Image 1 (cartoon, rainbow, N blue to C red):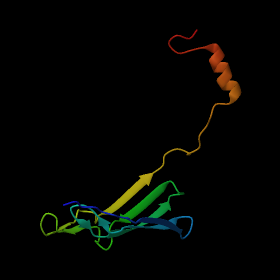
Image 2 (image 1 turned 120 degrees about the horizontal axis):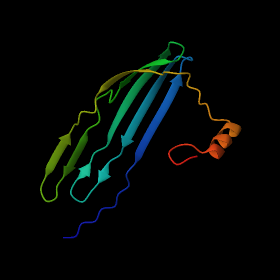
Image 3 (image 1 turned 180 degrees about the vertical axis):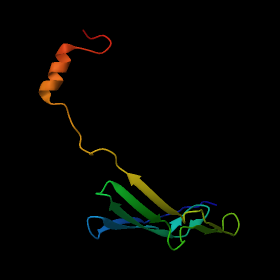
Image 4 (image 1 turned 90 degrees about the vertical axis):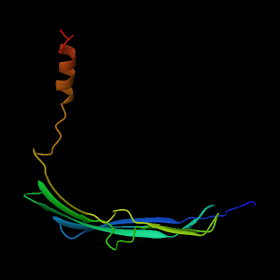
Length: 132
């Protein structure tokens, strides 16, 4: 018996940042994958939502961030099929996580490029292992 599948799958992702002020911002991520018809089984739709916040302090040299992934615990792989026999399945990986981070930036954060004059002078003088 010949099996043919005609299929269109929808994938939607959205990411937004919401800046409250210079120090505080929030983020929202959502993902949806639609129903997917396959030869052996049909994958049911799945979605997840992540939220996060970021707070800068100590003259913006330090940042605290907090992220909560899969807020509604909905990121599940579910399927059903009837080829070659009836089957239903569900797999829920550990996508529901919380992350807290603290970072600190040392130095001024300004990039100092050599002036053209200084760079050219250094190249003419040589230097290094083989330079003279």
